[in-house]
Length: 350
Ligand SMILES: Cc1cc2nc3c(=O)[nH]c(=O)nc-3n(C[C@H](O)[C@H](O)[C@H](O)COP(=O)(O)O)c2cc1C
Image (tube, rainbow, N blue to C red):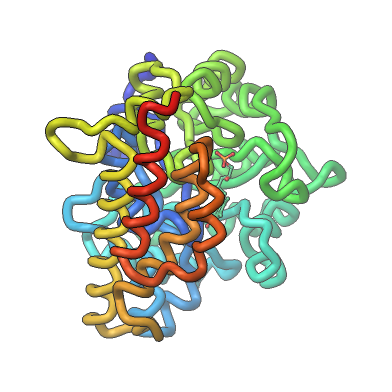
């Protein structure tokens, strides 16, 4: 797929098909696999600005990048312009992030009830003040991840675009659904096109891209400068190289063959590597200052990986046996034994 490199500030995303921030999924294990399989950039999970300021490193652990993980945005939320500026400075001073991203689209109660995330869509002057305050505090580029509106009554995507740009944001990523629809329903890519027309800064489109054909249609419909993929990348880090090479993803078969060189081109190896990275991440966390998990690293990793498994095995014949056992899988060996059995059952079963 042809897309021009996307530049904002001193960031350049050579292939602007990027991984969306997804709390509970996009930790360093998933992000590094996506980068290795063609994602142009990644965002961290969502961190609270107040938490970053107050808890001496515990919240920061949620943002922790892997060595050499680039380009990466530190993704934060909050409502107080001053606190958001402080949080952005903490991220900048860490020195490992390429830009700061401000969440103005999260619809979950915990965030919206604090007047942050998607609640800012109903308070555009405050959203603007937050962007201005963060911009003033850091030299890293600043982007905004938002939606086309909160609900039908208050939505004005063009006014939103104007405020974000006028407040100094260097880039905007827009999920083409209203906050009241959470993650359901059809995305409205035409509104992305209208925002693109109204903006001088680059815009990345998001929502409903699950195949290379979807990515092409989004760009053709809206003219956005880049594409962001969320759920389409869970259990499918290959999607980025598929979009790059316009390869259909109706192809679980090559992933079921044993690749001579190992690596993560097949399903079993990818799952094994994802799990290995999660264990490593939990070992680092356990060894670090903050937030020791109540489970030992391997078990913590297995618990986290359970949420990825249904996505990885989607479409496989006989997956039910694995899925009903999910809650009992507590070791890497347990998981890989079950996955191996399932993959074997599916080999040659086309
Ligand atoms: C489990 C989950 C967690 C998410 N967490 C965040 C988040 O922390 N910050 C954010 O801006 N969006 C978050 N999102 C929204 C995604 O970034 C994305 O906008 C949304 O999933 C639509 O894209 P998709 O249709 O490609 O999945 C989350 C979505 C999911 C499904």
